[in-house]
Length: 280
Image 1 (cartoon, helix red, strand yellow):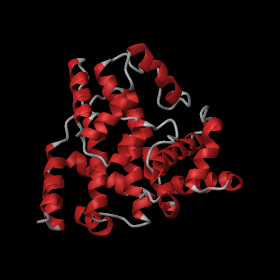
Image 2 (tube, one colour):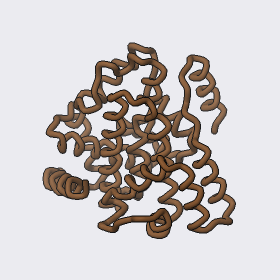
Image 3 (cartoon, one colour):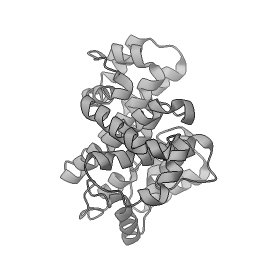
Image 4 (cartoon, rainbow, N blue to C red):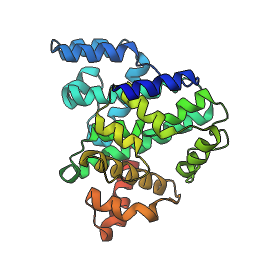
């Protein structure tokens, strides 16, 4: 982590905002993979130490972007079929929701349910458009689950943060800016620092930082990933029969970046929505 990011983390800590630490299972898994001395069975044994994480991993692996109609009954199958790198990305995503989802308030459950749906849709979009965006489903899934992870971190620090908001409200992304101003914080910066602290790829961290705009000065992968996330949010709202107050001002740019023609947009949304519902 760069020194300025470390300093920002220290500033957050001084203000009482706690970045959730990576669970021991995740650090052990990362170290084992980095050593190069591992087998599918040895990695499965590490993951199996955390039953809650195993359950979340199986849930993530059932996304149509990964399962493609296959049913996984054992951890070994997930590793063998998806591969070590993709499985590790899913473990990271599952671990974060577990680390910041221990509070059982309904708003936390709503938040992670929404994040999980956005992540699943983002993974499907990435799979459909990988030849254009060069972003892979597991990367998009990770970004989808992490993209607003600063919000539950701030809810843990400030019980009134988002207390009157529901993640199901279409104005939720817009209202977060008002919440940030009220508490003198920035949920996107906090989310970025969580991603950096957890060792996510640089372009994923950048996408989390610029999740509500399409940056002009970021690298191509980050721009593509931001666009995938915004399209996933749009489809998520469509699934729930909700409007998107931000889409009109950015939709054309998003579609251009993702590689979907404007005249094909409605058909694509309907097709993706149907596939997502069928897999649920």
